Length: 246
Image (cartoon, rainbow, N blue to C red):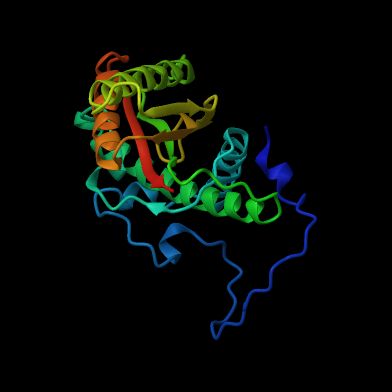
């Protein structure tokens, strides 16, 4: 898939924006250092040269995955510390894992906004009030080996779904009264924007549930991510980025 080929396919009426500015236009391309974003000091040196077109392409790919999974992309990011889950200690690769987590979070936010704009033109679908939807992006922030990394991410997400479902069911007050569904897209394989030739597979994740409390589901998810990471290839760091709850 070439997301750049989809950039000019929008045929609907363009929304009106106030583009006035007192600043003198610059002919130089923007970089992350030109924005008002404040990256963590530990990753600032790694991400200062990340190109906006890379972020745009990843956002387009993710929004297409969100569409495939039927994500509503409503609500807002959870305010809990577990809104970003890292499945294993990155060790010496901590800075690289943190940099990947930061740039993927930017692309994820843009993908959510693209999906929300698409939903304005689609027939309105409302989930039953008892069903809660969580949206996330899963990726390997560090890979022990580029070969087969997409397959390993798929396997890890299947383990997460199995473990999370079992833990939620075992913790239900009345067994069999709750419902939980975990689905994910096939990983998109791409090169890291900060790690040279390192492969970084990324997948969209949708979790829908009813009959369980949000903190309990998040705790089960955290435990499942940590357990799946322990069974993965040494050197892989599994991350679920910015859980959005609707």
